[in-house]
Image 1 (cartoon, rainbow, N blue to C red):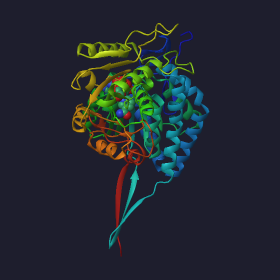
Image 2 (image 1 turned 30 degrees about the vertical axis):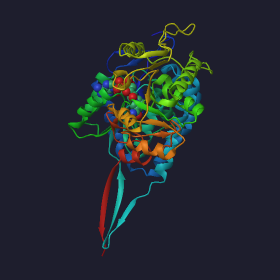
Image 3 (image 1 turned 180 degrees about the vertical axis):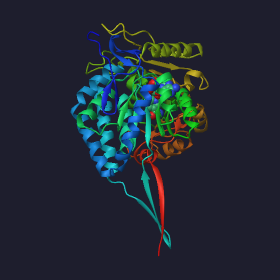
Image 4 (image 1 turned 60 degrees about the horizontal axis):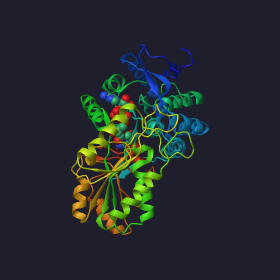
Length: 482
Ligand code: NAD
């Protein structure tokens, strides 16, 4: 096997090889070099992982919230020790700038465990008094969960599910994206090192069509928490429906950034560019359709194009890099397809799109960030999720027209509004069909608030008490007074 790295599943507290000899080759998005081989787990591996989670469930669920919160803190401490390793692995595996994988991915992965540890420690039993009886509501664990995650924020999103799921007494089988498996493997090393009871967290590697779908279908799974694309989410929902598995779906987005003429222009340009291009535009919350009030359109456009052209594209491991590589060759082809489609649909390319190949990284997946204007809000490019470094600019005059245009997409995840008039910001927010809006900021996260979308962006909410409620079953006990 030479120096090649072969990942293993983690089942029942042991790293173990998969049953088949089938592998996926995981490539570094920036260089095209091989990082590792990822096992394709089959139905036998899936069944083994679920069995081990089932065996671990009774004793794990009997621990008190306080006892489980101590385990979450131990995981957080271990991940904190591994902070730089998380950042390096995430940057190499995803192609994102190292500064981002430190400030967002590594930081949030630790914070997720700490945050849920604190919440669970302080959970109170709710009571409802009647004249002649007392009701009290306990939150019981559900059982064994399937946690399925995408490639754009690998450990950030996996830890966002694992922490509340096990914190509420469930045991889990994780299935990370086959494109970015490295930090899921790191999490298993961390829980192994701290001696988390065997079977509480299991991990199976593999693709979606085989491993992921077999996991969701398996009758041993009691609930599914899925984050990924809308088309996959629909398959997951159909498969989970036949046995009424509890289901949470965090899916795609096509989010608007709305710029009013009375905004603080410098801060707004910086905020809108960040929202369009952070992580190469590969965040479900990215604002890729930018609506600008007519009176400032030309000025705002030229400042925005200058700011986009100022971003430094290059080696993700360089501290000064602002934009890294796209996740895969296929994803690059998708972005090029939409970039060409924008022109066919009548758009005008203001910057980007040309192949951009940082020196010595010619085999990676590179493209200069794209800004397009002149497209109808009905065009495919301004309604479909592209999930890459492309933004479209649109002019608006009247608030009613703006709201119609913004709502004219199947998605409803997030958005941002930029104005000094907070009453107007709130009024417009409330007219938008979406799960989240930021006013004069973007991706400003308080972990206590509900996170999730409407329409084709998903079902349910994560975050704070919404996560705890999804990952548990409330049970009411009513005691009649003497
Ligand atoms: P994807 O849907 O292709 O894959 C997500 C995960 O599902 C992967 O682990 C994959 O292996 C697995 N999978 C694929 N087919 C499956 C099946 N039939 N059954 C079970 N599992 C299956 O998504 P992706 O390309 O990895 O991620 C990008 C998408 O994720 C974008 O649409 C983005 O908007 C969305 N996303 C949403 C959020 C959110 O919170 N709403 C956050 C991040 C990403």
